[in-house]
Amino acid sequence: MRSFCWGKRRKKKVDLWLKEVHKIKGDVQKTEQEVVEGRNYISCARLGKLVVENLQEAVELHENEKFSDGLLVNALPSIWQIPTAPMGRGATVERNMGMIWECLMNDEVQKIGVFGMGGVGKTTIMHHINNQLMGMT
Image (tube, rainbow, N blue to C red; front, side, top):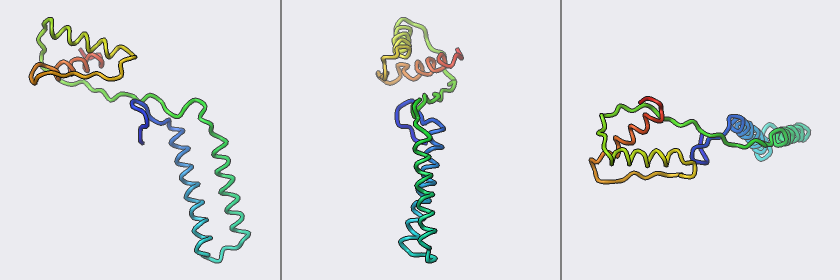
């Protein structure tokens, strides 16, 4: 299943609807192929019946689902507890963790970038924040 929006996924009923659309599309293509190839010398009456059935299925599928409550739902995040090394406590570490935490709790912030020289503790801080979000620490 593909996601169309970050953090969103299609509702199951949308996936089921799309599956039914693909089934009907396959039925229509099969009918078209029989017409093109003239296979089994399909009678006009049988062909007309197949076309009407295909059309009725498509119309019913279209009319029965309006998706008035939307197509997407929030995807559940995949977050796990990550084993972490002890992190030193200091003014800089506390300040950085506080700033990152505030950004995570602010609905208006869409992206957070954590950058700095190698070995300063960026990954360790993020592991600790991950575990705090999971309620593990």
